Length: 606
Image 1: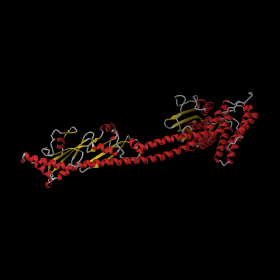
Image 2 (image 1 turned 90 degrees about the vertical axis):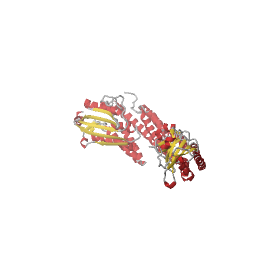
Image 3 (image 1 turned 45 degrees about the vertical axis):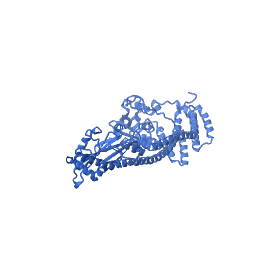
Image 4 (image 1 turned 135 degrees about the horizontal axis):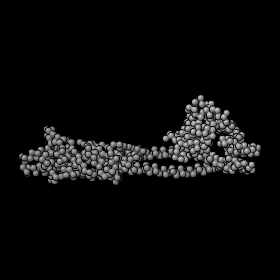
C-alpha cells in the first residue's frame, strides 16, 4: 500500500475556470467598448456624409457655372447667323453675289469691302473667334481673303463638311478637334426676303476653345488628372483623350452614378462623375465631368482617417485599463487556483487547509469568501473520506469497463452542492439554484447505478440535465433538438453514451464560434440495430489523419469519445460501429449502431 494517496486531479481545470471567468468579464467590457465605438463611428460617418454632401454640392455648383459659361459662348457663336439673317446689307450682298454674272469685278469688290466692314462690326463683341468665312453658294468669301478649298479642320476638308449640309437645313453643325482646343461651326444662310428660305450662303466660324482651360481654372475644382467630355450627336470629344481611354470603364455613360452626394456610393469609384445637358439656340450638348473622387472628398476623408486613428488609440488605452482592472478583480480567484493546483496527494490537505484559512481572512467580497469556504469544506470532506474509506477502496479493482466508467462516491460533492444551493437561494439567485439542481440530477444519474446499461429514458434524463446546464451557459448560442420514437424508451443502452457525445459537440462546436450552433439528436431502430445520430452545424471536424471516417480502433477526438468507443467494443465487439464524418458545408455527423437484441438482455447476460 502506498504511504500517500495520489489523486487523479485535473490540475488545469481550475486554471480553465479562472480563465473563463476572466474571459467573460473581458468580453463584457469589450462589448461596452465596442458599442461605444460603433456609436462614435456611426456619428462620425453621419457627420462625414454631411460634410461630403456639402463638398459634392459645392462642386456641382462650380461645374454648373462652367457649363453656363460654355452655353453662353456657344450661343454667341450661333447668334452670328441670326445677326446675318437680320442684316439687310449682308442679305443683299449674298443675293447679288449669288447672281454675280451681271456684276463687274469692281462692283463685286465694292460689295465685298462693305460686307467685310459690316461683319467686322457684327463680331466686335464676340470673343474666341479665330476666323469667320461668309461664303456665297459659289464658295466665294465676301468677308476677307484666306479662303480656299484646301482648308482643313481636324484632318477633314472644310469644303466637304459644307457640302454635307442640306440646302434647306436651318440648324448649324458643330465640329471639335481631339482635345477640345478648336471648334468649327457651319450653318446655312437663308434668304429672308419674302420668307423664301432659299440658301444664299454659308457661315463658317473657326472657334478658339482654349478659353475652356481658363474656365476650368476659375472653377477651382479641376486637377491635372481631371477632364470632361462633350457629346454632340453621335460624336464625343474630351479634353484629355489619353485619360479618357485609360478610364474607359469609368468614362462609359452606362452605370455611372450621376452627381451622387452619397459618400459610400462614391467611395468605390475612382472618379466622381457629373453629367449635364446644355441647350443652345439650335443645338443640344451633353457635358460629362470626371473629377478624381479622392480630391473632391479630401477633407471628409482626412476627418475619417483622423477619427479612426483616434479610436484605435482609445481602444488600446481602454483595453489596457480593462486588463488591469480584470487582473485586480480576478486576483483572489487566481490565488485560490494556485492553492487548488497544489492538491496532488492526501498529505497536501493540511497544508492546503492552512493556506485557505490564511487567504480567507483577507478583506474580500462575499462571493470570493463563499468560494474559499466551499473549497475549505471540500477539503474537509476529502480528508474525512481519505481517512475512513479511500485507501480501502483503492484495493477494490473493477473490471476494465468499471475502470473506464471511473465510478466514484460523490457524497462530498452533494454536500458542497447543497451548501452552494442554499447560498444561491438565500441570495435569491434562482438561476444558480437551477444550475445546481440540474448538476445534482446529472451526477445522481451518472453515479447512482452500478449497471453497465440502463433504459434509454434514464439516459435521456441525464442528457436533459446536462443540456439544461449548457443552455444556462450559452443561452441562444446553443440550439438543441431531438427526435426519438416512443417505442425506443425502454431499450437498454450503455450508460454515459449520449451525454459525452453532446458534450463533445458543445466543446468543439458551440465554444469554438461566436454564432448559434444547432445540435440534433436522432435515435431510431433500423432492422435489428439501434442507430444513434448526432449532428451539429459547427466547425468541421479536423481528423488526425486524412480519412474522415473512423472505426472503433481509430484515433479519438477526446477522452469521452475514446471512452465510448472502447466500451462499445467491450460490450458488442465488431457488431457495433462508431463513425465521425464531415457533412460538406453543413457540419459534423456522428453515427453509432449496435444490436438491439443484445441491449435488451445485456444486463441479465452480464
